[in-house]
Image 1 (cartoon, one colour):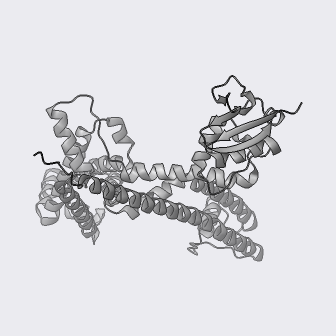
Image 2: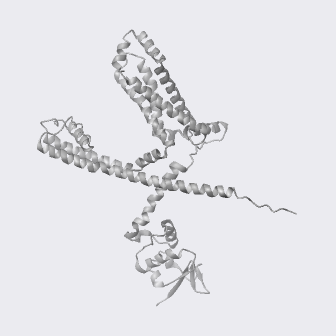
Image 3: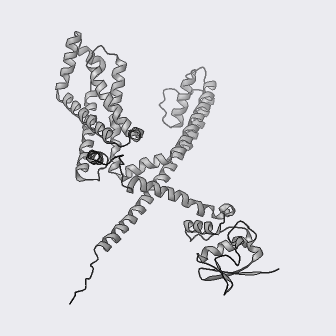
Length: 420
């Protein structure tokens, strides 16, 4: 039996058959009847206040069994309409996949940009008191350079101290070795300790001690005022700050004892060098640096995959060259793996190299494979950086327009009628 169904969607009339709508019984249109709220008994028409342009594609889905949409319609709007009509996207045509699912990655990128750049950082404390208010102000000064002029001045001063500390470390390394220091203080234990401690009275020692005090106070204040200590230790830069401060004090203590082990001296000095990572705090001022770090973070899955491929390839090429050049420089398997990594990364120190024709062929294949392998992560990081930078500029333009509209509304003059 032929039964005509008239559906009015947003003022546009569509005519179909009941049998067509019954092809998908779990959808909204398959369950409409004369008793539903959308049916107008006077005109015998089903009325829905929805988007008629999208409904045309929905009705074609009932007719053909294939779900397609025009590319000039917002995907989020399409999803809202499909949710209303109770239609799943499992039957979406392959030609629409890129258009339909690319929006998900774009939305994720927008959320990341909004979180890292435009959402104001808030510090939530469990209680509200004068002490927590003071903690919040101190933490804003230390963490957010845009919160006030004093915070900006402090961040600039802090970065200058970092530069001075690293410069002093470089000056100390000129012509200075652990052996020379031991030779200079080859006296009794008490005299050696006294001379080593008095060595900090010169200008280099004074500057170093002042920098250590500033770093210690800054790190201690941030740790004391942070509302969540667990999140504090999750930050890589915070861990580096703590380790470098501990390393500075350990280096001073080890340096004061002439009979201390050279290994302890080297370890403590390496911990002091970690303070160079404090330069990454420049990302609070330079958006491009923050986007660069963020793009590397967003590419971590691909970078881990490529690192795994590099490791597997180095093992394969290393084992191969070890078998071919076993009587030469590649008698040790560790040296073979080292050569494979150096060759694939196109560094090529030249300390060990194959001497046979077969080994040279393997080296050529290894180097060529390394070129293709290294080009992949560069492209991935570059694409993520470009995408993040574009989204950042778009978000910034949108906020600028919002501020202009808000400023325009706030500056409208209200006409007050004069009472006679």
